[in-house]
Image: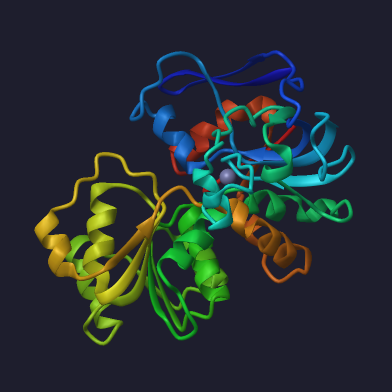
Length: 338
Ligand SMILES: [Zn+2]
């Protein structure tokens, strides 16, 4: 088969790769229905997170099970499944506490931009639907695999509740689905920070009540204006830069909560400022597995349509163009069809 490899900055190749096989008795092999490019894939793509050698890419996936190892009990060939970017046994103390993305047996997935995928710890990692889903729901089901689950965790970690006043920092796919998640959790006011017309429009569709285009101190001032002068109850940080973290901390009211899910790059916080900000900070790699059953159900019931964040669909063989489009911000998120 062919799969996606990153060779260096902006050098993506779709080339011959060994077909994955069952290597452990707890593995499954799935034939992908769809995969996609993550905002976090752009860090190594741009060379900001350097790679030591050519690296296979992709960690968002859904598809049909082809084969399972002999110890796999719950997942069966022929089922449609969705899994997280982090594998989990779903049975250790950390998993039982809902933090499957830090499972003691965790591995990070990284070969999903291809037609076939090996998934370790299949029983703990994958969630199967009871029937094969209709084709038109595949983009939204794929979104549950990472981007929606991550936005959902941002809202959960930021303690979004009915009536909350929420601000979302970041208008990438995760930020937009963080808006959708906050709406689902009953937020009363959802302020999306965005300067891009197409992203503002989607944010409004997903439930944003206000758009703030200013950044830095001006952005903070605008958010205070919209929140009785004190800052938001919950701020969802979905970027991972120094600017976005400071934006989030300064936009939160004392006693409020920040859910941070953007993978940090060169972020350092001033301990004294943090101390006097008086905010709760909760974030990390989203435990998507915790939310998969619920998010899949919301999609199958037609209650949410997170697949709208995919504004470009390409055959996986054209993956390099998918990266370029996202790098140049011509696309919010690229869906790849095997
Ligand atoms: Zn575990």
